[in-house]
Length: 453
Image 1: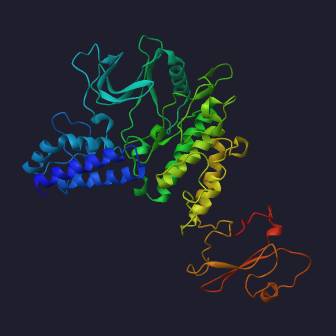
Image 2 (image 1 turned 90 degrees about the vertical axis):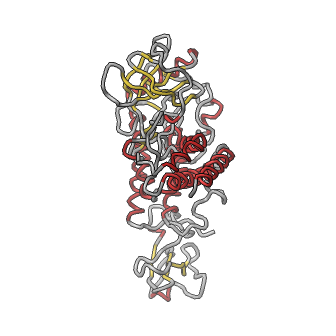
Image 3 (image 1 turned 180 degrees about the vertical axis):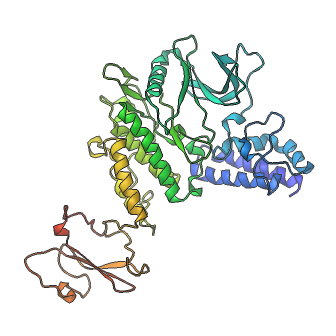
């Protein structure tokens, strides 16, 4: 690829991403993958990423590669603004927060340090706080941390709640608090820096289902630890899940609007609007919660699981609607098992949800084991792969409710003599004829088998 073509490709891709950035998250992820291809084509197939030079210091050292000749450097000079913009959107593989150019003169350390922490560069700015990449002064360590500075003094109660929560939590899947100063003129806290960026920027479609489930389980373990300590996060969403440098170990962060019941004090007002619109539990909408419960988090975790499976999200409880139902036109029986769990999480009534993340983990462990064992969903709508030949699928020949065959067979054709009024469900493999017989009336729930639509 020559210089002109490469620069045009970078420029075109950048403008397309700008158009998609706030419109279609799924399409944006596709363009992130395309951006990686652009970088590889510009800088050579033997180098996935850009070498560290001049002020560009945001790439993890392990991912830095050599430049591939003068022509590539010319491309960088011509298209570096567009390429930098692309890199800022590629949080999954690049440290994009640190890619931003400093917005102020950092040579004046009196204006660019907090306590023992010296600002390396700004990261992001939210509604309530500003965040910076920092290093500890007075040491030779190159270790980076994240400093969050409160913007609005009237929100000090939220900030104090976040500090209290982080102090109470020590878990490998919860962001680690390093330092804090909530009482000074400029309140701030310092946490570990997660080099993998946020979960929201990770193209989940590049990971197999097993990996996504493992990551979700780790997130649940972090939230379960918080629930054990009396803390309800209330703001669970992909943007608040961070990744360590392996891009597979998630940590739960941003406890800024958490609810913390210490038995005597409750941090964070319950009558203020909280939570992300697409992930928030219905009882928390418009700040209506009188008594915040861990079940609010399990609702959000259900939404998060759906997003990790699809890269899409929806308002309220729409996972069973046709356009969002993953069991429709999907031959993978695992999704029928996953939906059994989603039906216990994405529920409007909190009393009908799984109560907290500890209970959720028990259900999730069972789900993973069933998927690993290739267990069958107790659902007549689900594809039932033959356990004998592994090729055909079972079809129902005797109905459990009516004792009548949908075709020509009846119970006597299977050598059974009817005594009393039993309920039978009999299925036969379409390929090898293997037979499976069930007596739903002997099950704990005789209506456990979902009826075929």
